[in-house]
Length: 253
Image 1 (cartoon, rainbow, N blue to C red):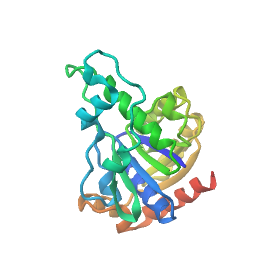
Image 2 (image 1 turned 90 degrees about the vertical axis):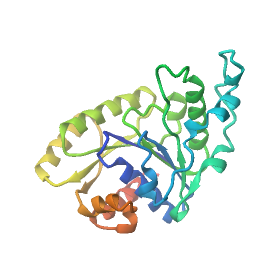
Image 3 (image 1 turned 180 degrees about the vertical axis):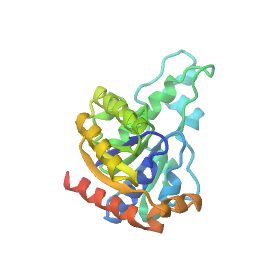
Image 4 (image 1 turned 120 degrees about the horizontal axis):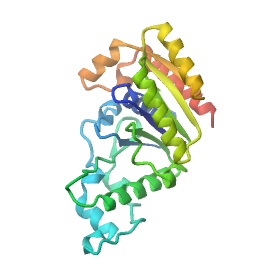
């Protein structure tokens, strides 16, 4: 099972991705949690104190593996990556393995092609391993390409009450479809107003985006974030709703 979680910044996708990862691990699945968001905050939701080295920062390794260190301008599109998870992944609570992709600097810093090639090769490798993978993506889902998209079973888009968030989900849906992801679902998060939910549901229906679940706004999650605690270790109504979403996802397989 391979799930990519995406949405506008601040909608709570990291909370949902990390909590789903731990819940699935508690079910006995071998879970890899991939942090592909530049904010790199998935560790907090998983209950891991410190991030492992972001892969994009391993410049010497990337340039050696891709052959870019030769200075010829030619590099490998399929570098060796099968040992990266073991060397640079971090084990967390419930046995979840965290892999942090990191960010790629652009403009005035030289060619970023080897870094992109390496990250995409690594993501392909992780997605096609026999594991459960939960990816916390940025809205642009830039780490995904046509090759990696084939390994994604579900794109879970997270939307909060507000039209800007809905517009972002619309862009994500188009980006996903452009690279071959057709199984997309939505989750409405931070809900306080039932009337606003109805409006968002209407918009999602217009986009042909099935609604998988609704998660209420809850102070416990804010407290968990402030105290750097994993939501699953704090509990509460929102976590129970994420558990219900997890069960619905499992029913799809």
